[in-house]
Image (cartoon, rainbow, N blue to C red):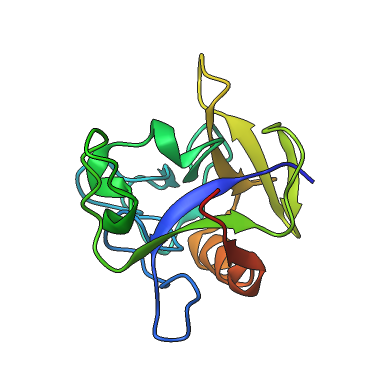
Length: 148
């Protein structure tokens, strides 16, 4: 399985915090400034997520992220790490190269346009937003802290 990395806020139980309102959560922002997905009809949270190049952002290595996305305890004096109550999570036992493909039931990872070190987890087909959020949330137990 490919190594898929995402920094997220930690819940009290150590798993990723689920949410839809800001970055660094397990879930996507469907509306507002810079939404993570495109909806049909546009802006309708009861609509469908269009299967395109948008979704839950992931990377090959947390070291490529902006400072606010890096857990503060990983500050090396140069990376500007300032993420409070965050951890670096890896999906499953991902040890393979960062590659496009299956992530979980109904979900796949594709590269961001023109990039091979960042991608998105998206639905494999156009589905209702509520189903996409539920599919992402179902992966919660499979994200493990791995700051290597």
